[in-house]
Length: 317
Image (cartoon, rainbow, N blue to C red; front, side):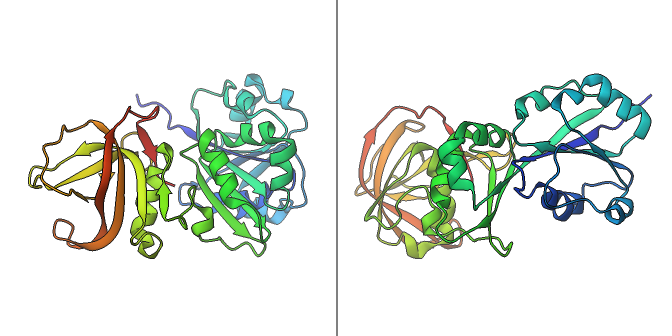
């Protein structure tokens, strides 16, 4: 006898009027993984945006309003499972309640948390960072996707990105302008000063640099860079080159590989593979036969032995 298929639970959290309901209606409920059948929706606070009766009927959503966090007990969830037999569950959570408490609840055996999403109102972002940073970051630490909407001109996107990545390096972060359009990343969003003649890349920012250097060569051409990496040399590579690499996780633990750009030495050298070094190099863009395209190529200026970073795996984004 086969066991029951898991019932996915999706959590959307954020402060009042941060756009949670809009995210549920316009993004979450429009995804391919939302299966036909009843969606059980727990709404833990009422904001400006509401769920219209017609919308709930069309989407086969059963809405239950939750006024106090104490209502969300194991017995309550068990009764909901018995009475509604949902295909999936969505919890629109109150941002002032501790997210950790919700994540540690005892759910019915076949309920499985499959996503945590957060919304942030860009017009109040600076205020929350100054006055309620701990409360804000607590809900963002466990989020896989964070949408900062209604961003006015001048909002410190780069500062927020850096603060977030320390707490949650794997989060996907999206900024939207006042018209609801996604703001494409720019030089101001990068976690280092790309306008400097020498770009110093922190240990956890290697993945950001690796991707952005390939996508925006005009920002890095002829620039000096400094970063920490491991020595790697493919079997077919001569002694006048090597590849300083880092292990990068692109989406999950099962999708982790070493990435880096080829680096030309001043002379042929024997190198001890896998050792950690501090690399100081100049960036150029050239055709590389191994990849069959133009790409970043490093010219070594200096290299010194160093200790391994605290976290050897870095993340994209």
